[in-house]
Structures are given as structure tokens and as C-alpha cells.
Image (cartoon, rainbow, N blue to C red):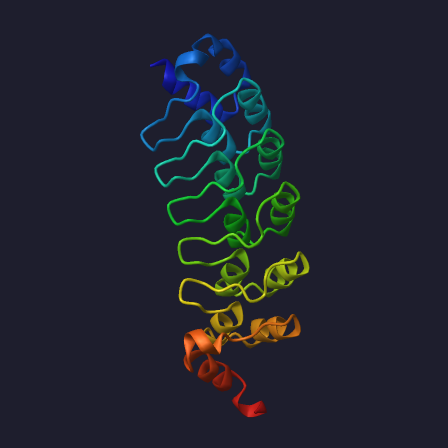
Length: 215
């Protein structure tokens, strides 16, 4: 079927074939395959920025979700194809689109430990304190990934050091529970606290265990 050709061409980066099939655009350009992937998704997964530019230039849908509700922008970020991310952002792709986990493109950039993509998303208006379904901001997510460099980078960019998750835990409490002394020290230097009134003594005990020898 013709729609398979469009998906295959986008995945391969075959711009010539896409142009030859472009008479189908009104019917098939946004059609999904079995995984609910559009040609734009596949071009982003495989890093074909020229194909991405061609598709968005022809007014394809920018933010369709795949079977996990991931947008083309998210997949470009996940596969660390910066050129594809840049094209999508320049054409107005939705930075706030949420996958099934509630993660946004910025969360995915943090998961990939890619400071360049984090910065690019922030430059295009991504919310640095956006929360996923667990209430994790990108900063809290970086803590759970034990990525000190990303923690420091997000704080430098203005992340809220005390934004709480769904259990009212601050980033520092999460770091203390994970017994990540490096992360706790970074957070302390940037004004991090434990939300004692909301979480009781659990976070305090975790903090005390972490610094037992110094207290």
C-alpha cells in the first residue's frame, strides 16, 4: 500500500521518494502505522532532518502521539537528533506535550543527560519546572538518575530547588532518601530544604543517615 511507502521513505530518509508520492499528502501524510507512528515520527527517530523539514513545510501534524503518546519532538530528543529537534521547535512543536508517563520533551532530554538539548528546549520556552505524573520536575528526575552534572546545570538555568513531588517531597529529600550525598550537597549550596511539615521525620532521618559522621 502507498502509505507503507511513505513510512518507509521517511524512515530511510528518502526525500526523493517522498516528493514523488506527495500527491498522496491529503490522505496519507499523517497516517499511522501499527505502532501509531507517522512518517514524521520515523524521520525523527532516524535523524533525517531534511525529511523533517520537508514534512513540516508541507503542513503535516506536528504533535501526533504514538502508542505511548510520544510526539515526534520527544522521539527526536530520545534519539538525540538535535537538528530534528531544532526544526520542530522552529516550526512550533508543542514543548508541553506529555507522553503516557507525563514526561515532556524536557524530561526526556534530562533522561538522556543531554545538556545541549535541555538548553535548546529552554531557549524555545519549555517550562523548566514542568512535572510528570509522579510530580517530578526535570530537576527531581535528574536526581533519580544520579546525574550530578545535570542537577547543577538545571539549577544554573533557574530550576526551583524546592519544587515538591506528588508526595510533597523536595528534591533534597529525594536525594537524601536515595543516599546521594553529592546531590544533597549541591542542593544545599543552592538553598535546598526538606519539607518537614509535609513529610514528617522520614526525610530528616534519611538526611541524618547520610551525614551521620558529620553531625
